[in-house]
Each structure stands twice: as C-alpha cells, then as structure tokens.
Length: 291
Image (tube, rainbow, N blue to C red):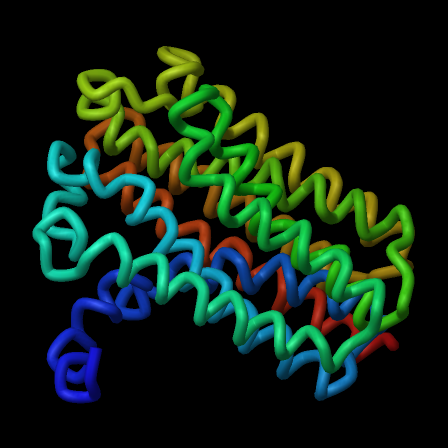
C-alpha cells in the first residue's frame, strides 16, 4: 500500500479504530486515571501519565480494529454496524490486522519506557484485548472479558507508578470490570434482537428480563467498592460527594432504558462517561485539597 492509497483510506482507518467515536477511550481512561491518582496519592509522574494516556488511545484503537476483523462476517447483519469498513469492503481483513499490529506495537514501545513489571502486565493486557472479540462466540460473558481488558490498565498503572501491584489495585480492577459489565450490557441491549438472530452471545441476552435490575446492582456495587477504597486511602468530602453524584447518573440511565429502546440504551451507555469523569474529578480535587 503506497502513501496515496493510505491517504485515500485514512477516513476508513479512522472509522475502523473509532477515533471519530472516542467514548471507548473515555471509558478506558477514567479507571486508569483513578488508579494513577490512588497509586501516586495525588498527581502521578508526568512521564507515566503521558504514556498511559497515549497508550489508552492506541490500545482502544487496536481493540476496535481486531473487533471488526473478528466480526467482519457478522457486522453486515446488524443494523448498528452494517456500515463498518470491513462490512462494506472499504478495508480488507488484512488491513485491519495490520492496523491492529501497528497500534499494539506502538503501545508496547511506550510501555518499554516504564519498568519490567509493567511490561509483563502489558502482555496480559494485549492478550485480553485480542481475546474479547472472539469471546462472544463462546460465552454469554464477553462483557467480563471486555472489562478485564479495559481494567487491566489499573494494575499496570500501579506497577508503572510504584513498581508494585497492591491489593488496592486489584479491588479497583474488580470495580472496573463490574462497571464495564454494567455499561456494556446497556450497549448490548441495543443489539439484542440482531444478536439472537445471528447467534452472538452477550450478558444482555443472558440476563433477559432481569437486565435492568442486574445493571443497577452492578453499578451500585462499583460505587460501594470505590467508597471502601476511598476510606482505606483516607479520602475526604470531595471524593465522596463525587460518588454520591454518580448515583444520579445511574438513576438517569435507568430512566432512559426502562422501555429498552435501542437508541436510548446506547444513550444510557454513553452517559457512563460522565459517571467515570465525575469520580475522577472528585478524586483529583480531593487529593489536590487534602494531599
């Protein structure tokens, strides 16, 4: 592929990696930032912060590319995804794999500037990111694999900042996994009818009529874990106010999806960005005012 061809296909590569739809970057970034702030007990090292923010963009983009490769024969049968580049033929499967490889290699080069423990953990993170798109063919719990892939930035962040992964990091990891299961179930609810027809599995299908109850229960468990971590870390008023405000987003999301309309399910999924951001702002402000 020459430079001219790359230029012509650039918009399709942007669509492949969802850089035009950054919600996935945000949902991966917020737990990673929670981890960095807890690990550093305030503002983390700037080099670590840079590496992890850029790495978030790269790994999420790689995950989208490998997802579309895995779903290249499925996306054309789903209303929400039938215009993706591989489904339309705008890009080939080989080009999607090439993009995945380049993005993961670039992210790995960044990790080389951290330490040995972080490098080892990054290999597990890459394996999880690659495994997720194929999980939906074999289990009703692909959202757990997604959560683990997204959440693995947390032990990596602790390792990069402190060269260790304490129990606090793993509790934060659990909260990130549960949060991902909750918000991605909302997302999967939008595709439930199409997924049932083509045999794709998801927690939205598994939970059935109990989907909304389970989603809100998971979200509340996440906030409880975050509250316990905050108490253990000696956090103060601003952090706990942020957790209280996050309950409002949960109530709003439930109001959106009570009729299970696909468009409103996607809207509820997107709203989780504000929940994650609120927790981070409260945490950062709390550390700034009460180191």
